[in-house]
Image (cartoon, rainbow, N blue to C red):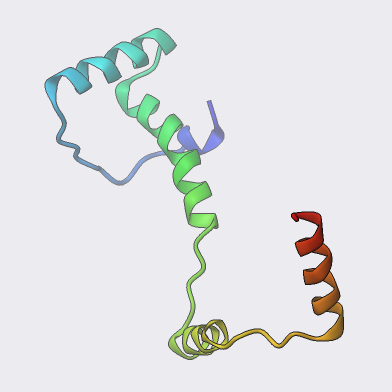
Length: 92
């Protein structure tokens, strides 16, 4: 079990779910020999951490700058024009 799951827990989270789903979670936890809480933590935290790692938070000025850049058409320089022609001929 990951070390993060062995530290003392200070917080509590409630979850409402259908009876059948609770039975499914209990059966899965039982098969792994852990509590439902430990099962849920072990299976949800890695996914949540990955999701959080893919989120970028920007302050308002940075967000506005990025949106402004995204709203402008890209300037096509000579190298980009050649690459676009090569890509177009490769797909033709």
